[in-house]
Image (spheres, rainbow, N blue to C red):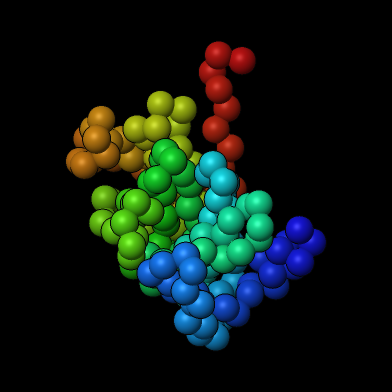
Amino acid sequence: RSVLAAFILLGGTVFITADHPHEKPTLKTQLRRPVALLTTGELLLVGNRQSGTVTVIDKAGGAILAEHPVARRIADMARLDEHHLVVLDDATGQLRDVSLRSKPASVRSIATVPRSASKLALARERRQIFVTATWSREVVSITFDENFDKVTQKESIELPFAPRELLLVDEDR
């Protein structure tokens, strides 16, 4: 497990694709720079800034199962459900819905955000996304319909400082 952690922290250089689990994957060297880490079931998902890829790792064995190109440059990502991610692409100013159910992963743009976007957070009901924008000094709130197909409301809150992090606090606590 410490080898896996070192791989993630050092921005591993292996690009893997395999159509069948018993095939030996194709390897490609590229700069990744991991910036986001999520868990889902038996998988570990790593968002790589420089390569714009999501690396899928088996938690039990530490094996890299796949790597999906999903953005030009990943700033952050969050999990919608077991098979869907929201990826923040700060190079194109897009929020992207990424489905890991298919190979390769399917990617669709769901909203525009400022190009200086740096972090995102999902509201508890999973229909609202907040995005920080460093250079424009704002937090953008985007609300979606139930299926995450359409933006129903988009608001921006200007701040006197450059926001870098987001923490949503549960109002019930």
